[in-house]
Length: 322
Image (cartoon, rainbow, N blue to C red; front, side, top):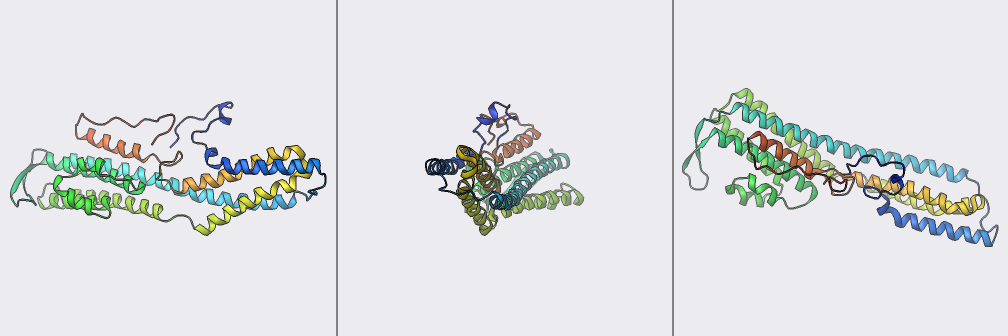
């Protein structure tokens, strides 16, 4: 995501990082070359393209603007909902960690059954706190990797017990598997009577909220805007920008290529920006900085545990926050 401040009046025309121009310059170039060719033909052979009037192009332009506006609003709504969901995940992670650290006694020692060798081992309250907080960190990283389609193991394996790695690798939905581990851990805490039923219920509500965040993000990721609507906007934009110089050249003359290029930049730019915002979880310049958000969760939660070897914040590079 671009985090640089608003450029000044001079730089605003030359800023490319975060701009949509690199994606749409072929369309702008095509429109400009076509407009230039038509202008040259009209100059050497007057009346080749008669004056059609601007009323038709004005009506089509207004209709196209409405289509692009509706699509841009729908895409931005998806982007903002995704950002709101990740804000909720930050809130739930901090709240759950605060509850775990506040209500589980560090000095408490509990006998637990080891699933591998069947023996009972002693686990302190501090161990239970760390396990629960670590699973919360692993969940945040796993959600990011699932939405981006990347391998999560390097980020989540340090926070998940070694005995759970094999099953975790086999899971179809890794963050959901981690959530089940968190639910099992909470069930163990309840059976051991480490905290009251009311606190257990409050912590379970935090887990439910985190599950809702995962499901809502998957809904956004797996449900794009209808293809027919996108196709209609694409076709109309291309047809309008191709027909425009034929209708303007008789009245604008040599100014036709410049005007057509500006209009093409506006319409193709809105179309491309809407397409980029439609999928908010990627790595494009205007998509959400999920790496920085998940790193923030990790830093906050490990700091709450009192750890000192925590990773640094992810800072913007050339105004871009990943």
